[in-house]
Every structure is written in structure tokens, then in C-alpha cells.
Image (tube, rainbow over all chains, first blue to last red; front, side, top):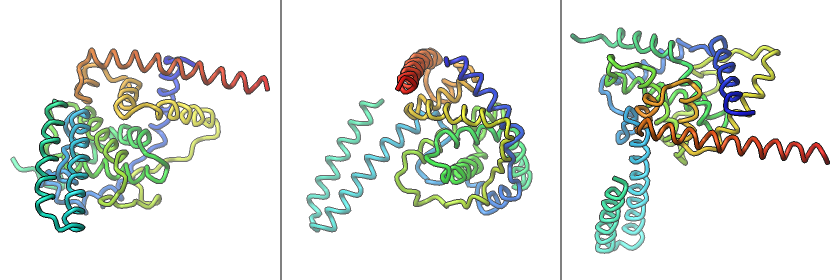
Length: 106
Length: 180
């Protein structure tokens, strides 16, 4: 098998999908009605815009991952040690790391 | 001019009907298992609906939907938990899939093999293979992914070489199993 075989197999499957996949319009309308606030035009998770190019969303996801960890760590330390100073210092350090990460990633 | 919600809904449904295969293929490629498929399809459709007001009608809907679908699928693929997502029962799926005719069994097996091969790639390369196999031009692939057309060409060549090596390894393994 080579890439041309892969392409042929893909095209065969693609034609097959035309006759086999159907939209469940009733179900779909119900989903849209439940989410009638679509006029607000905001993404479901608030902080990610899914309409931008894929690599940009990947960058957002990478950054969000760091922010999530930082927030969790800060909350845990605050709760466990009640050490506001440590939390403040940790947040400053993490923000610095995050800024550096953003600069390095462009 | 203000478009009513009903008119917007009709327009969205029409466009989705014309491009339903994009949602199907993206969800199929990125779902971790069959149970996740309906869930991921609903997530993509919901995000598309929520972002539809920002769709620029002078641009092709397919490009917009590929981009949005891939982004949602990759985000879901990375997510460890699905706290904000609803689990969609299989009988409430947005897609109804007719049973394959018996003569299509070979095709099904071939499709599974294709997915196993493509599934081993990283998030971006997987998207690249999908778009390339769907016959999308390098320029548009670059627009969807956010990389240059030249970069697309280079990556595709590398993927082809990688695939070729995997097939060769697979054939050797099957041959040596046959000898035992």
C-alpha cells in the first residue's frame, strides 16, 4: 500500500458516507433551540475562540494549561498553608514564567 | 438588516446538511472511542452554531467548518475531563448512520486500517492528512491550520515518507508472522 492507495480508499469511503450519513434534523433543531442564546456569539468555554487557525488555538490551549495548573497550585497552597505571602510570591513567579513562555512561543 | 433567529437557524441547518461529512470525518478521526463520537459531534455542531454569527459569508463555509471542527476536536481530545460537556445518548445523536451493506465490509476494514495509521500521528499532522486526503489545496490547508502553504507541502512529504515506512514495517511483520 502507498499514499495513492490510501487516497483511493479514502475517496471510496467518502462516497459511501454520502449515502450512509444523515442529519437527524429533529434532534439538531432541539439542540439549537436549547442554545438559542447563540446570538451572543460567544464560545461555549468563554476563553477559546474556535474560529481562528488551529495553531493559534493550540497555543491558547497550551497557555490555558499552564494557567490552570498555576491557579490550582495557588488555591491549594492558600487552603493548605493559609500563606498569603507564599501565594503572592508564587503568583508573581508564575506570571513571569507565563510571560516568558508567551514571548518564547511568539 | 436584522436576520431573524429562525432564518439564521434555517441557513445554518442548510449549510450543515451540505457539509455534514466534514463534521463526521473530524469527529471520527479525533474521538477516543465510539462512545465519544456522538458527544464530539454535538460539541462541534454546538460551537459552530454559537460562532455562526461571526462567519464571514464571503468565505467558503467548508473552510470555516474544518477550522472550527478541528479546533473543537483537538480541545476535546486534550481534555482529561468533560465537565462542561453533556454525554449524548447514542439514540439521540445528531447523525443517523445507516448500516453498511454487506459488500462494504472490505471497505469498513480498510477504513479502520486507515484510521489506525492516521491515528498514530500528532494532532496537527492528523488534521493535515485529513485535509490533504479530502483534496483541499495547500493554500487553504495553510489558512485552516495557520501555517504557510510551503510548510504544508513539506509536512505532507514527511508524512508520506513516515507512512511508507510504517507500511513497510507492517508488511515485514505480517510476512514474518506468516512464516511461523
